Every structure is written in structure tokens, then in C-alpha cells.
Length: 351
Image 1 (tube, rainbow, N blue to C red):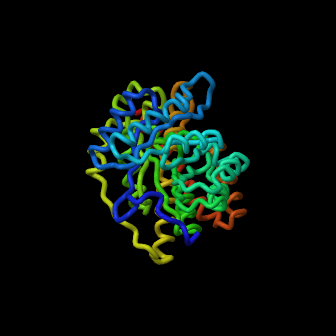
Image 2: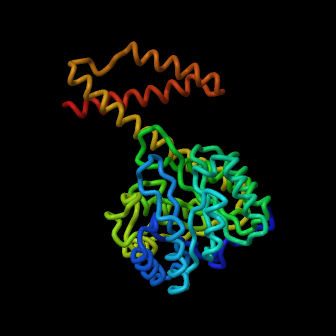
Image 3: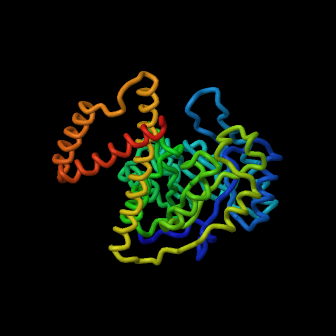
């Protein structure tokens, strides 16, 4: 993919910022958002027109009527406007309205049939296309979706990391699994990769740290959800920030542009750093569960240490370690330390 082009002319020596509300809810909301975003120097405006929702009955977007609001915002404030598409029909309507770019959402990227239908509809079209990662942390599926769009002739192409669905309890709405976009960059080094901290965090108080982490890793920009009155938003209210908060966030971010062609050792170290972050997150999650178990034991007058249970866990861990070419002694030391900390947490809570 050495012939890829910047998705927008704004892709240069500074991070690329794309901002706007999760959903286009009204003409007034769109124009107010567009005014505030353009005033802070951001030139690419996002808003969802069609909203894929998990449950029926949720707000699923205004539809093509809202494209006229985006067209008005574009003309009035000199913005480029982007929206999500999930079908060839969505693409056709977006092109008619003069949309500058589209993104393909995580659910659609996960489905090769749906992605191919959009790719077929894109033949002969010159538009910026961004693909969010699939719902599951499968880099091959992500690469496959990107290749489908590339094979249609699109050269203004980018990926958006928005995190991955998980059944585990984590601080995030969608687990970052930073190693997946890092592997995507290794495979497709010419591809622009942006981060969507709004969808990763699912909470506005997590957006700042996730944004900085993405820039530190080497992502080329951010897509952030911004709403005039987030608490009143019809979709994803908890993860949107006000224009004033967005301006403050951007002012605090540090841009440490990763040099093109950094050496392999740096890539490996960065990969290790992201894995270490995941290990810490998982340990924190494990201690949360340990404390909940401690509460249960305390309520039922049970001993904190259940030696038979611990022995079972240790034997199973050592067996898995051996099957994965890890030293059982090494795993035993790690699990002993984890168990010791779990016991300490339970005892500390019920002193």
C-alpha cells in the first residue's frame, strides 16, 4: 500500500483531530457544534446520521435528513464533514450530500460480506474512508477489511482504533488491546491510524489519558465525540465532552511524533510497554474480584485462605504454562505473589 494518500490535506506535522457529536440530533445542535469546533481550529467535523444500536427502540439516528444539516455546517463554517456508513445505500446518500469522508463502524468491519458490499459501491469514487477495528481483537480481520476497501481503488484510507468488546470487567467500555493496532502498523506502516478515545473509554473522564497514550504510541490523530450539552445527548451521553472541554484537552496534549522508520528494537519495546499496561489492568481487575470474594467470606464466616482451592489454581496454572513453553517455576512464583497480595487485600479490608 505504498501509494496511499493522506485522508485529508490536514494530515501534516500535527495530530489530525476529528470532532463532533456522536449523533446528529437536530439542525440547531449540529450548527452549534460545528461553530464551536471550527472556532478552535479543528477543520474536520463528525456526526452519526445512521446509528447501529445493540437493542431495538434505541435512538438509531435521524437518517438522510440529517445529511442536509451536515452540508449546511460544511458550507457555513468551511468544514470537512464525515459520517458513518454501513450499507451501499448509506454511501450513495452521503455522496449525494457532498460528504467529504466516511467511516465504517466496528460491527460492519467485523462482517466481510458487508465490507465487500461497501467496497464494491466505492469503485470509481474518490473519498476518504476510515475503518474502525472489528469488535473482536483480530488483526487479520481488520487488515482484510482494509484490503477490501483498498482493492476498490480507494487511496485516501485510514484505520481508527476504537477498542474491542469484552465480557470482562475493565475500566473501559471497549478494551484498548494496544498491541492490535501496533501490529496493524507493523504490517501496514504507510496506513494512517487514528484513535477514538471516546469509544474506548466510554466515560468522559478517561478521554484525556487515552488520548495522550494514543499519541505517545504514535497514532496520527484522534476522533473525539463532542456535544454542546453531553448530558442531554440521545446516544452515548457518558462519553461525550463539551467544546470547552475539548479545547482544554487539546491544549494539554503533547505531540511526540514517532519518527518514520524507527528501528525494530523500538517497536518491540513499545509492544512490551502496551502488554505490561494490560497486565497491570488485569491484575487490578483480579484484585477487585478478590476483594469481593473477601466480602463474601467475611459475611459467611469463612477462612480467608482456602488452601485446597489455591493448590488447584497453582497446579492448573503450571500445566498451562508448560503447554505454552513457559517455566512452571516462573509461573508458580508469579501466582504465589498474586495469591499473597489477594490475601493481604482481603485481610486489610476486614481488619
